[in-house]
Image (cartoon, rainbow, N blue to C red; front, side):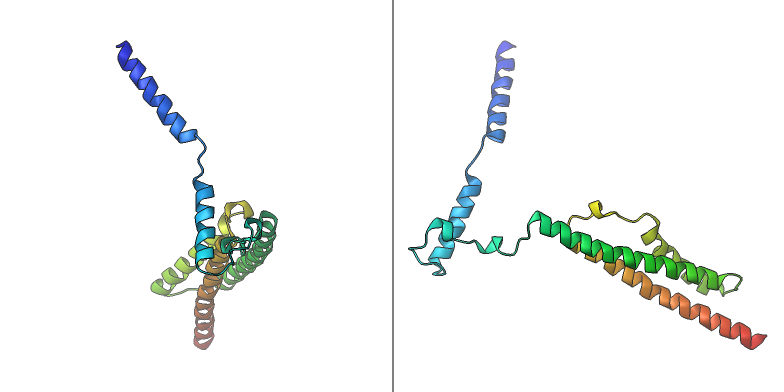
Length: 166
């Protein structure tokens, strides 16, 4: 029994040592990338290591720049959300008291509900990990706005048909 406990503890110690022991794998990757660049002839051999600029580091923005870019993009997202909310409110006002065919009403309701879901509980700035995520959300908002245009056209057609029958 004591031998079994000792064996388990030894395996646990070896596992933890391998898991948390620092390795030079990251340095190896940088060195191999530098060697690949040198072999391709992009950098002469007399260039020192401090002069070598990795191409992967050229376009990576710093954290401060990333935050500024995300904040600017998020302000655009907030404006788009505000416009969508106003547009939805206006359409609800225009629809008040009108009667629609059941299939048309169902289609309009689906579009309005899907659009309303985007502004009901919006993601805050911290919910996005990159500018790309914010741009994707803006794209969703713009798609919802274009879908609402269809609802607006249906409302206008219904108003015209109601005036014609009166």
